[in-house]
Image 1 (cartoon, rainbow, N blue to C red):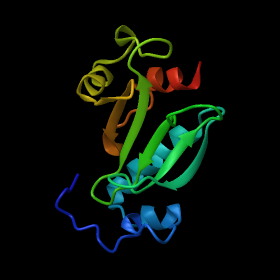
Image 2 (image 1 turned 90 degrees about the vertical axis):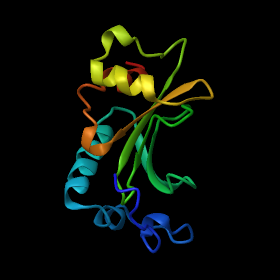
Image 3 (image 1 turned 120 degrees about the vertical axis):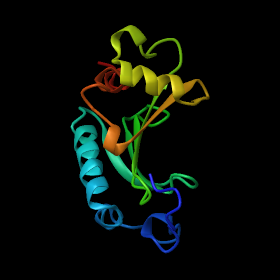
Length: 146
């Protein structure tokens, strides 16, 4: 992630003009674009999930929000940040739907351990280039109810 990269003037940072997903992807480096597309494809394949490009404010600006009717927070967020796109999967910190660390791979447990807990949810967050939907299946399934 290139935190120093200037994002002013990018479609991703422009609140008053709704971009297309293609425009946002064009602002990503080639390697990041491929990782973003792979993450988007894996999330779009989830049964019952729908997606919408939404303005989320700072710091996520324009992001793809994956939802299922009646679920809050969203099931996943795909953030096309030109400095480095991200995937976030919020999962309950405890109770029903909370991930079982014993069933998670070590990389996923590491992400869970370092992720913020806000409003009862662990906000598991990866760079798109590090997101492995196979390894994260347990988290994704917990949000899918499967």
